[in-house]
Length: 342
Image 1: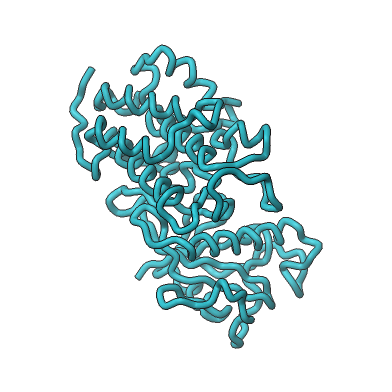
Image 2: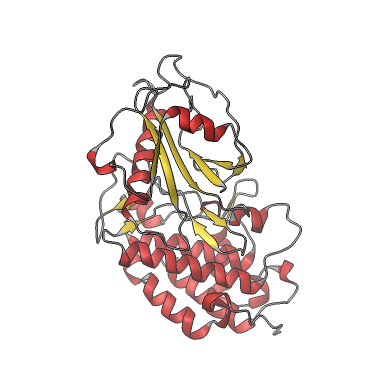
């Protein structure tokens, strides 16, 4: 079974010297259940030492690489997480937040599954062991050096399946979840190019409306973050809706949400084009005309509503799902309709 190691401490010493002892006791809310395994430090080291069965995901990078044991820069030889290292402490808090969220939700086909974790308080080791998702990230598929371009039906199916995952988090979990960092590098693709949402380090759990900014670092990523959140410090489900709209534009256009090299924000480029609804200026030229024009228009309108300035006017994810099921054949359970319409 291939596994996927998410290492929550990318700039600190992630792996202290292996210890034969079991990890220290953890908070009652993290008591072991039958489906999720808790690893001690030696167990984590054993997983790391076998690159054939494990991949590692660095927090916030959206990258997957074969896992290998290595020492990273550490602020202290004794304690990689000493109190003077505020960045490491924040990452450790994000590890606990992600663990809390992943343990609170039931399995969903489009959310990465938690297999186990390691939480060594002595060495401050925070590790999540996740299912391995073999086809990299959506960001890689759209913007990396890939041999084939994602087809239009694939893109619409990815958007639809991500919408189901977000609707599940927002409306169907026992405690509502706001993901807080929806972006293409936080979407993994499986063997069938179906998406799995990952990276819950910024997630907020258990509220129905809005909360003020907490001790958790400012959530979101350039190009995807809700401008209302930046102005007010308030986050809600509609913050995820905004980011989903940006991701939908990314799928339609093939352009990155934010290009530091070109100083370009996708929403700034696309807003005037959405008003004109000139399909040829909106859709990814690499598709070579192989797309359904009507579907492009509907998807573009969805994206436009999601990135509206007023959060209260943005649609809920359930509303978007209903619209996509009704009007976009390519979205429905991966059905392919993508005949060329010009």
